[in-house]
Image (cartoon, rainbow, N blue to C red; front, side, top):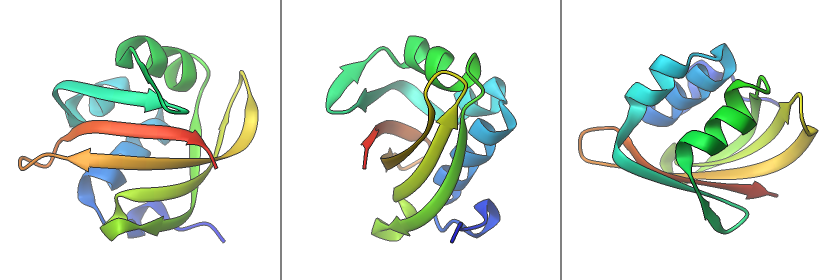
Length: 108
């Protein structure tokens, strides 16, 4: 059962999922802390290159099935035009200003 995006517990994570699903690169980038980092399947990636390829140019979409860690860990059915749909896990580090300083994703 999918959790409605508006019901996600953490405001930064809720805004992240909203921006991804709306393909809103400006809103997405505004959520990130300066120097934000990310990893995919345990390997650090270039955040700009990865998000362009895996989210924006391939029309990524997140359907959240479960959240934990006060909304900062998600179990997601993620799909994009490149890979189709897959079960993924996402975890977020949010700084004191409410911006995402790091996210990690990978197959669940």
